[in-house]
Length: 79
Image 1 (spheres, helix red, strand yellow):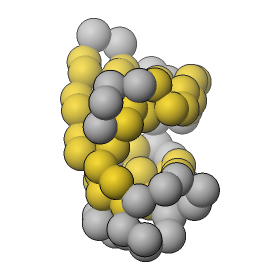
Image 2 (tube, one colour; image 1 turned 30 degrees about the vertical axis):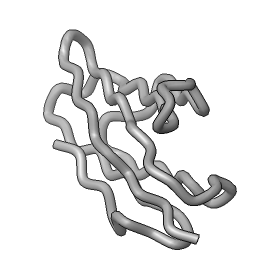
Image 3 (cartoon, helix red, strand yellow; image 1 turned 45 degrees about the vertical axis):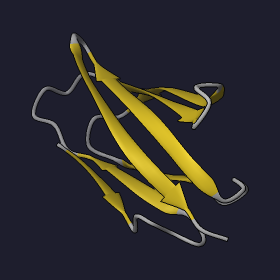
Image 4 (cartoon, one colour; image 1 turned 135 degrees about the vertical axis):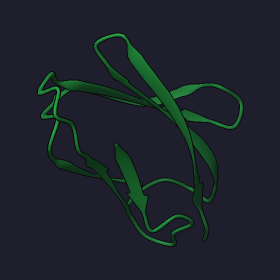
């Protein structure tokens, strides 16, 4: 389970990972053009990652991978 709060945001986003699996998580952030902006690896499966403080306004996509599972989430940063 992944929760993203607040979305949309004017400041930062908290991405909360909750998993019974225990395997580490990899997170990649892409801009609206599909360009890779950030990569975070080996994130503990039950943790919170804070992102977006320095991002310009716009839409972003986050790919979250854990083992063979993959999820995409859309994020919005408002100036």
